[in-house]
Image (cartoon, rainbow, N blue to C red; front, top):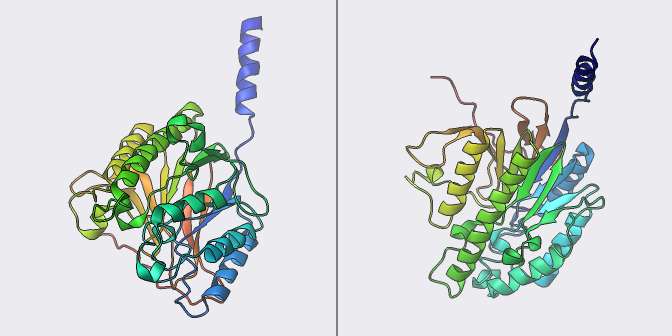
Length: 328
């Protein structure tokens, strides 16, 4: 055999003998605990215990760590931080509107939302690693001098798959001109989020990642509410995600909370009348009175990469699940 042919054969054998990427699981939950629901503390404890029992590679809390009718005190924020750090594995957190955007309401404590946000950033995102008893390292947007204050936007990789949190919240993503300072805050964070989403997709392309998942608190899709287009507070974010997902042409999973119901939509339509994006799947978590989570199996070697379903917590009231869609 010629040396060149022998070298080519050895290279082919090396490539074909690479070990397959091992499947793994992650859990996601959001909009809990809400103290207005009876037995909330015990139900939340059971939820975290069930996540621990599943031994996921990591868990993600999608924000709203208290109800809109609870006062967002320092003590409560510190208690949630202790809850997150009690998780056996790694837990990544992205803020929700109830932690800061809506705290100007009297029932939430009449706080300055930007003051609450500053404390959340200082307490929850002091270092570039997750929460939990077995934290994992994260890459955060603080590394970009232009957007260094957005320490909550994080990215990590597991099994070659790229994961990222994006600080997108309910209440119109703080696109609220009736409140002083809200529009300025929204505009700056909206620009940072666009840059962060593009960076996550760039990472996926550069590493030939088999798929990508984004985590955020809000339910931003206008089509869910019969709107022909996106809420102005979410328009730039959705436009960026749709453009990048179409260009990537690999499985993209969008995981969010906000509406307190489980749903799984394969082939997401971003605006009314637009063609669905076949490689984008939207997964919404339980929340509020439904103390359950979602569990996602990630198989980097499969075509779909992500397969998801409810994680029903023993001892908590069984939720109402959506009826399966029937073929027409």
